[in-house]
Length: 237
Image (cartoon, rainbow, N blue to C red):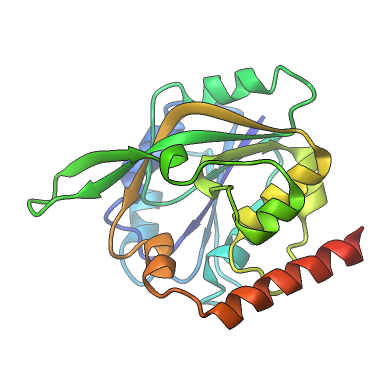
């Protein structure tokens, strides 16, 4: 069984196309868990309009948890053996699921990180393909290397339940979930980098990653995040 976990917030412009690209690759026994963070647009109506029993929407217990701790709610409800992360505004390419699952046939692999194509909208609103993710952000192994500079991108990650059990609950003070899950994968020494683009990574003015990049954290904040990660790692070890 596969659990696809997604956090949503005001994603009406993209959510339908993304969900259709995901659902077309899943079996009837799989599930898509969507944790909504209090959307005020038509996101939830669009999701409900798909009328697919595999989709399970988790209503917010409180609003504005942010992408990391909102996603944690979906992960905590996941029942699958394999967990796929998804953003509300990307597009899964054909055979993404089958190609990732093929990597898990190697029983030593606990986490797969695959490549993606960057896509941006031009002046007419048309999506144009740019560089590949691994060109811009090449992945590397090592716990401390990924504490210093994260090389894991959540929307390109899938992992076994054993890794989910290691990563949850999320510690407080995480800037983003993918770095923490990636570090947990590195602790198992079972992460696999798949050098094949299986996703359209769509960049626009309103996605959370773009906003984080535009509002770059101060050096002091970056140091505090890393010190917090070190404290957590030492405590959990």
